[in-house]
Amino acid sequence: MPVKVSVVIPVYNPGPYVEDCIASLLRQSLPPDEYEVIFVDDGSTDETPARLDALAAAHPGLIQVIHQENSGWSGKPRNVGIAAAKGEFVMFVDNDDYLGDEALERMYDYGVANGADVVVGKMAGKGRGVPVELFRRNHPHATVENAPLIDSLTPHKMIRREFLDRIDLRFPEGRRRLEDHVFITEAYLRADNVSVLSDYVCYYHIKRDDAANAGFQRFDPVAYFKNLCEALDIVDRYTEPGPVRDRLHRRWLRVEMVERMRGRRLLGWPADYRKELFDAMRGVVVERFGPGVAAGMQPTQQVVAALIAADRYADVEAFAEWEASVVPKAVPESLTWQDGTLRIAFTAEYVSRGTPLLFPADGVRRPLDVSDALAWVAADTVARFGEARVDLLLRERSSAARYFQPVEFTRERIEDGDAVRLVLKAKATVDPTAVAGDGVWDAFVRVRLGGWTKECRLGPAPQDARRAPYAAVVGGRVVLPHWNEPNAGLSLDIDRASTRLGPGGLSPDAVSVSGGRLRAALPLYVAGETEVLLRVGSGDAKVDGPGTLYADGSGARLEAAVPAGRLKGGAAWKVAISPRTTAPRFLALPFALRSGIGGVRVVRKESPGVLRPLRRSVGRTVRKAAGALRNRRA
Image 1 (spheres, helix red, strand yellow):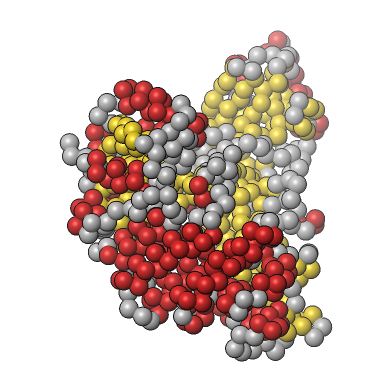
Image 2 (cartoon, rainbow, N blue to C red):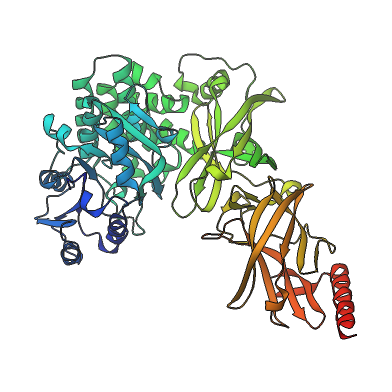
């Protein structure tokens, strides 16, 4: 069978951090005879070489290990891996990251279907930043002009081997930075097609607990920005002067220079290193970037770029201290279930030290004036308010995978004395059946307003609106909205059932057992009649049976058969339901059943380990059971 994908991993002293990478490579859905894994050990001095040799011996034909003397950086090991690769495509992975289980299969199929030379798979960052806008949707035919490809310059792509050989594309070698920028930029600009796969997380970019990732190390600014200019040279070689070149250059000015001089990121470095960075980048800003580059950035970025070019370091620090206080705030207004979806209404705006930012009511766009940068930013933000937008993203807590949710929003100017607040009012729709997998999903709001694009948690809700909406059984999934402590941000527990249905909406008359049937009015949302699996359990003993949920006013009605004869007397039997019969995920209900001489009675679960009778319904149940028992004895 021809090899479809060769996975190349440069390795240098990863220690235990390589284990997740190894495990993900062995879990791939692509058949083992259709891909190969090439570890290139770049002179590791820890236990890794022996670990990899043992792995290769255990998986002959799938895994090979190449050992070499230390080369100083990742370029040469990747090139050695390319030379050894037999696959139609080459996938580059770092030794402390890992792949989604279906990454190779999905990326390969997507690349073949779209005739791509380069396939960019959706990334999730665990402690590391990854592109967001690039993965808003799939781009089967992406270019640097119609998609923000330039936002993703890490090497973690799948690239057609024939394309690499045809244009003789290899990584720069030696002890240097940004070799991946040079390589990926040329790949984007010379590929016949680039395809971006955004509906599945293919690559998990990990920050190590020891912060030993190469990208987190302090670097020599002079050497760094010299290497950066090599990436700019690639852009200049394959583009003409004009808007496209300016847009591409803007990525390096924005990410590698301006963003290093902003807010907490700048202030987190020692004072002497900040100035060293500033001095090293200033020459590049002046010499390499034309006026059209900075002009396309957000207003606050334009300010910082202009201050760098003007050699005004003290003003850069002062602006950073002010910006460090500016954060978005998103306040939920309502959460309701409707037509099988969760509707979330919220407002979003920027605040400074907890107080809403105020802007001039008559803001207009004027040429940049760094002599009064704050006033210019405020006026320009008002003038650009028509471009502001807000998004809701769900972020899976364990994997950091993020997905945009549909949002409709309006822009509102709220008068506050002689000034205005700029507020975005939004309504988001979350369809649980479309959420990509089980887990706890935290809600984040992404606000683009004036000079900022930042994210925050959705919440906290006002105290009078703190109660989350009902849990739901929708489309075969169990969904539990709740407010997290201590910050009361909104989260959705989807098919994990890590919490139980609360007893707050359960009245004494809500649950009854009679004639072998359980009936319960539950604070639960269902879109329509839903078949469920009822589980009654005590210790290791479990009894399952069919049940049905019916929409009933604002809640749901559960009806199910109770196999009373199989419930051992005296024990409290917990009750749970699941909309699945295969691999069920159960939602615990806030009551239990107890079987005795008088039959089955219901006890209410107030808190873990605390049970008390549901007085009126239990009384009726016991009286009916006792009467039936007397009649049988008679």
